[in-house]
Image (cartoon, rainbow, N blue to C red; front, side, top):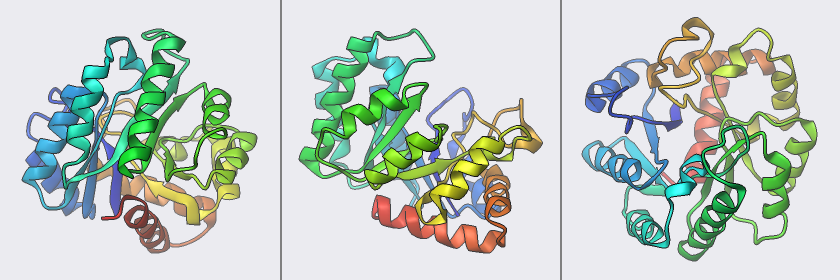
Length: 251
C-alpha cells in the first residue's frame, strides 16, 4: 500500500519520522508521500524524503497558510519542486471553513502554484474544504493537469465535475465512519480506478482510532473501508490504489 498523503513533517506529532516510517512499513505501507503546507513544512518533507528510499515529497502552500504567502516563498517552492524526490505541488486549493486567509489571499496563492505546476510539469494535490464549486470553477477554465482531490468530501455533482477533469480522489479515515453513507455512495460512483489511499496523519484517524492521533500504519483500516464500499477483498483495493498512485506520482 501507499500512503499518498501524510504529514510526517509535523515535528510535534512525529518527532522521530524514521520510527514512524518503520512502523508503517511493518504494517504493510510500502511507500509514503509527505505533504507540505508552507515553505518550512515543504523543506522538511524534502529532508525526510531524501533520507528514506521509500518516501517522496509534495511541496506547496496550503490555503489556510495563504495570509503569509509571498512571491519570494513561491521561488523557494519552485526550487524544492525541482528536487528528484518531489513528486507534486500541494496541498493547494481553497478552504472556506477556516478564516485564516482571505479569499483574495487564497486565490493568489492558488493561481501562482497552478502556474508553477504547469510550467514544471508536476501533478497537483488539492486541499478543498467547503469550497468545491469555487475550486472547480477555477480548474474548468484552465489547462487540465494531473489533479488529485485530497480527502474528497464533495457531493455527487462535485464528483462528476471533477471526473470531467480526470481527477483522482484521495480516501481517508472518514470512509470508516458510521454516518459517512453519502461519502461511501459517492466513492462507489467514482469507482476504484480513480481512488488512492491516504491517512492525512496525524489527522482524520480511521474509526478504531477516531479522536486519537493518526498514523500511516493505520492505512489498512482505510483500505478495509474502501473494500467494504466495493464488496471486494482488501488485496484488490491495495493493488488498484497502488497502481493509481504510482501512475499519478510517477514513482
